[in-house]
Image 1 (cartoon, rainbow, N blue to C red):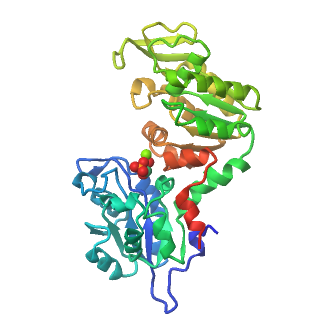
Image 2: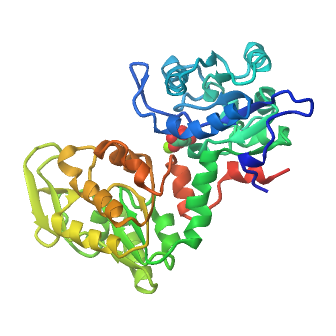
Image 3: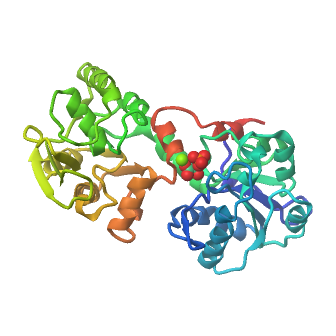
Length: 400
Ligand code: 3PG
Ligand code: MG
């Protein structure tokens, strides 16, 4: 059984508050020791606040980056802790090691309502190797375990997998609960017409998602560089655009499969881009059948925007993963921004995922992300669920 936080009692039998060990995903970007994107930290707050309200003691643990088992000051969780303290407007205890006796002592001596953040779990190889001894040491930090690290749930690591067997009381945090509701159970219950918008650069990372949505979605709108490969597979000359030549056969197969299912694959019909090289600044527009030899397609054009927007407006549910253009470049964010507008103007059920897509929405207009029914904090884990797969760390929570 997958336990929800609301079913957990944070007081022990003799009415003392329990210590809850929470796996969060604070794998956030940092520049000059400052967190530059706090989305994942913000999304961990409901669970932390819930536990604080319940009078629990809280220990937080996370990885950041891929230090490969070595201490690396540039990948410390200290900046994440500072951001958290600022958001919660309260001091946070921080330990420079996640399994040292000192760190475990700090956890043991916490008082109700105090928070202790541990240093980057991946400073130890044992984390990614799911080492049982390491997991048992982590388990000493608390008596209740919560997994709220959705972004890491596709990994089978000590802090989200091995550690679970040391706890009888364990469950999902509020973030994981919401992610699972929208990305797992929700897909099968979604209202039709259903539209999947899929973008980004590479087909191979999204094939499983497209396959899973055949016969679920009514429409699959393809954008981003991935669309170039689909068009190249349909014999369009894409000029100097990014095309994954090795995936042209895959694109053909997917289009054939679509033709035999209820699902339509819809490709862009026009593009904005540049001539010669990325960043040349020589802007160019073209419909799909007159792309110059020297053109690089970098965003969908106005006709595609109308085509996609009309389909979105006729949908009841939209799933979106991957920007439809090079959204991090202001000149090529227009297509992605217009897709955001189309979704939010239609007031349909909208589920968005993937770091780049969520970042593009957050960059477009402040606070807009909250208008989506759900915006995932996961990259790989989100894709796994959208592919119909299970997440190992979540499955571990079901076990006794
Ligand atoms: C992520 O940012 O995708 C997650 O935190 C997982 O990180 P990883 O890909 O390094 O395991
Ligand atoms: Mg990743």
